[in-house]
Length: 319
Image (cartoon, rainbow, N blue to C red; front, side, top):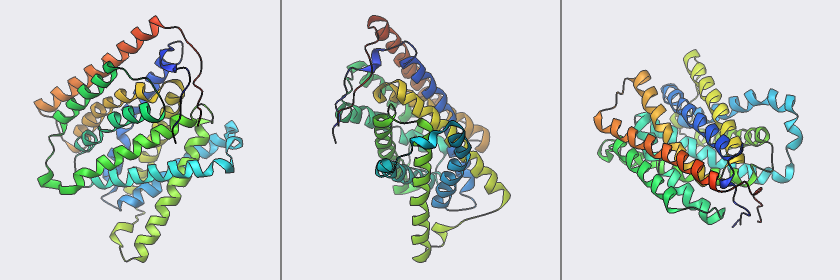
């Protein structure tokens, strides 16, 4: 489905684009906590079980807010198919990435995943009709090169598992495009709640199938206290970062927000060092510096572009 966007919102600075960029910045700094807690939890249970409990807890945390805000009124049966796809795509992305975390350092896994902003930028141009200049493409490319300096991948050590973050990247890019399509039409809390429910359903089905096929290790669950605490941490981080990202996409185009996701590697590296003792070497610090520089350039470029063009209205999706 091709969606032609109407007047481009990226040139609006008054409370919209810069707000969206700020929300995305905070969200991507929080997001690595999902991976840190997930990696800790995989010592006690399977990747699919971690994803399943994450979705269930995330939806449970959101339920009081859904009821208090009246967001439940925004949930429509006619939209279930759309949100089921979003939930399924997100479930696949998380299972793939959590599986990666069992064998790789958090920062390295995230560095491979950072082909996603480039995929998202291209898909935004194709499916959302967003205007993307060479400067934004260049900033994405420079940020990606910085990520390559950080990862220093060794397929000899982990094998094909190193490709799973690429699967995650495609899934997350598709999820972001779908979020952008509905972010201005639906309540963010209702969207995230439905995604969590559907993600949990798909993971539950996978666990049942694995158990019945005799793959007990892949369906392994745990109820010990450390695992429960880690899963609560996963769910809280996912809820907060997820809500921030939905609000961000309501304010700014996906292609504008994509380069900011590189800042996640900064937080992931710091947390990986603190929790697991994985201290970056000089080459990784260079990569981090390049990522920060590319993100700051995007911020500067957006501010400069917005100052030359006044706000021109809302996007008008035409499926």
